[in-house]
Amino acid sequence: MALGNEQNERIAVTVITGFLGSGKTTLLNALLAHKDMGNTAVLINEFGEIGLDHLLVQEVSEDVMLLNSGCICCSVRGDLINGLRDLFVRRVRGEVAAFDRVVIETTGLADPAPILHTLMTDPLLTNKFRLDSVVATVDGVYGNGQLDDHMESVKQAAVADRILITKADLATEETLMTLEDRLHKLNPAAPRYRVPMGQVEPEKLFNAGLYNPESKSLDVQKWLREEAYSDNHDHDHSHEHEHEHEHEHEHEHAHDDDHHHDHSHDEHDHHHAHHHDVNRHDDHISSFCLTFDEPLHWDAFVTWAEIFTQMRGENLLRIKGILNLVGEECPVAIHAVQHIFHPPATLPAWPDDDHRSKLVFITRDLGPEVIRQSLLQLNAAIAETSDTNTHHQA
Ligand SMILES: Nc1nc2c(ncn2[C@@H]2O[C@H](COP(=O)(O)OP(=O)(O)OP(=O)(O)O)[C@@H](O)[C@H]2O)c(=O)[nH]1
Image (cartoon, rainbow, N blue to C red; front, side, top):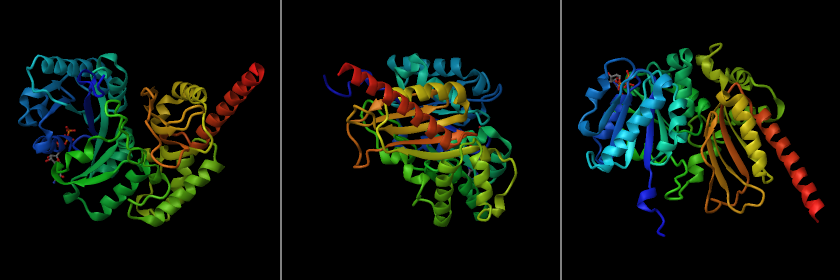
């Protein structure tokens, strides 16, 4: 049977999130005018009765469907499922062009997690669609204030695969640098682009590298970007990264509490006096990469994931990783949003000679050490059990 069987090819879904007025519709319009976007259908979730954005999306009126029952965080399930299913049925019937990508614009007030959960778990959807990327627009002028005031806006940036800074033409360089530093700390792995009036190459936003079972492709380095958590070459302020690496390292070993980012913020203040502020929402968010030298037991990882997603699901904003598992030659890719894990995928090969397990986390009020310790403890316990079993069998 040929690989890439048509029937099994799922349609890539990109979710555009971002605070109110941060430029989502402007981005969408600019994207849709791009020549590479011909095969794209659009779903818009609007807050309130009148779907104004619907009128603003041009040249795709046939394919535009409006989810108009209000805020996505409370009503996403039914609407999203129905919207995507209708779109799919219309595609099968030939009523709309055979699109191969869907872009969903969420309302600016939405916590993006529920929409991602729905896309990742609803059987009706996972059969036909796959989550390809989460794009967050952040207002270059008001972004700092919105991150201060609204946890949703922090979450939107934290779970994104790509961050677009809009309205750079209206903001001062200082404001933009402050914002970029802040976004870097929230989500070091997401590439950031300054985007004037939504002008960005679509390819920068799509194929974010979430594992695509159809093509079996996963550019692990690009996807995981674990180097962003230690020695980031993409960021301009290298002295800060050395510093960040230090404190992350220190926290991994020295702190077992849930507030390490609060401390780290204090430590950073001599570099960032301009955005010192107590109790900022993003002070609760941490991003870190854990590496494990020894292979892990799959059962240990699953048990860990079950416990943590049940007990601390809302503190785990996003997890991505590749695992070196006992008894497996090839790495296994995993990713999760809060309490929902995508089915794990075995990759065809290791991307390079580094065969350690690597997990990147974006968390809220949850530090690296508690995660590392619990996973190692479970792993040791399961290793012992399997050793005993092997011993008994022998
Ligand atoms: N100068 C400038 N204006 C921008 C840019 N991006 C967006 N805007 C303007 O900002 C305003 C809000 O942009 P929208 O695209 O409607 O923002 P949105 O996120 O869709 O807004 P909501 O749907 O209300 O959440 C509009 O007047 C845009 O023209 C930019 O890069 N530069």
